Length: 604
Image 1 (cartoon, helix red, strand yellow):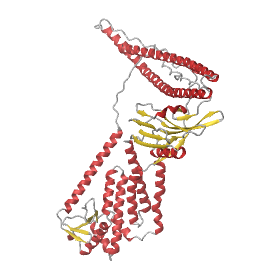
Image 2: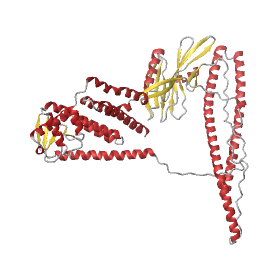
Image 3: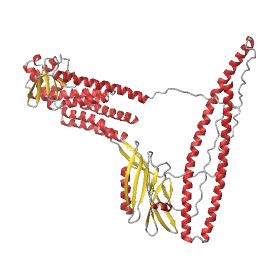
Image 4: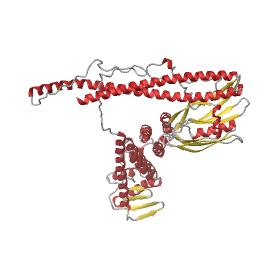
């Protein structure tokens, strides 16, 4: 829906741009044929240009993983509040919301249908005029002499007139005029302008644009016919005589047009100087500005990171070629070419599918390096793919190993080749390859539920007024009058309190919702960090075993350090679990208190 409105807005803007250029720069020039093509070009441009979008890729630095704060610095997640004095007043606002997009679309469709019906009626009227009439073929023209009192007109190669209404010289002038319309296919211009009026009927400029096209066609016909007629003054008198015939067929080039005075003025006007042709090119800077402002789609892409692992003083570079949901077909092609040229690795990409947002939902990547076993990455589903890619690890001896990385958190099917076990050669966080640690990795710190003060409760010291007790004897008028008075006072006091409590409850819900979303985001980062830690630890263990052997002292020392780190990690996790239990307990107390107040409010 939004895309349709954007297209209509852009097309309407281009029509306005071309019309103003014609009206202020070209309307008084005698370059009638050039103006004809200029106006037609404006119509075509208004439809085609909005679809031509240039995707500009801006490379940005990869986003860094933010470390969660140390658990020792955490604060209480939920401030202990006394909710005993707070009643719950739930207000449900059910309102009918009008979708104005559908309203506007409905109005547009109604106007469109009405104009299509009018268009069909005009064709029927034309068919009625031509049906059953005698046609005289002369060269490329078909002449039809009718009896109806209709202004002379042409429709493609048909020239229609009523010979009984004009003298021989007048008829000759009229036919010369209509021959120009027929010979230059001006009917096409008329039909195109009518189609655009149907499509963009809501834009007042399109009706002025159509009028400018029809007027310019008459200027062309008058100019060409005057060259073949010896008596130009008689031709002008013929123009004036035809103005008495107001009946004409809408979708044709008819001899009668309004603005006869302008036609006669243009007929007698001196030819414009050729240097004025520059006015046609004045539209180009405006179109360039339009493209720069509205037709460039900027796509942000993260730069590829190069990871290096240190062994002594040597560095083994690791490269990653990422595939994301917004990766274009051109980028996939360039990735395959780079792998072949720089690393001599054959990559075949197939079964690419995208959703309506142009996001990847399915892809198959076949990787072959020399005579080694091929590897396959295949993802298929209905949602956008998670980050994945190809990792190339260059060892100190120059040998290259290829691996596949995935971050698939959805329920899509993912199949990888047997070399997937080599993923330990590179550690992955958010799709970026990082260097292997030279020291034992440190476990990440679990996130802390966001703290901070809660909004201050309104009128913290107020108490809910007790509801009045109805009298035992309902027939006691004095007691009932007193009860009704007390009840009115009670309702007034509650009316003052309830909006404040409702607003306060809404604030608390919003703050807790925001904090919950922040905590979930930090937990997602923490889980990725834990995945990285486990991969780092596996890699570190392999490096130590290869370097020193399983029985070496260095391996023993590092494993003890690792055990200490893991114990500390368990302690941190227990603290986090305790913290979360306290938070859940506080929230249950809060909900229990709110329900109790709600029951009290209903009883009253």
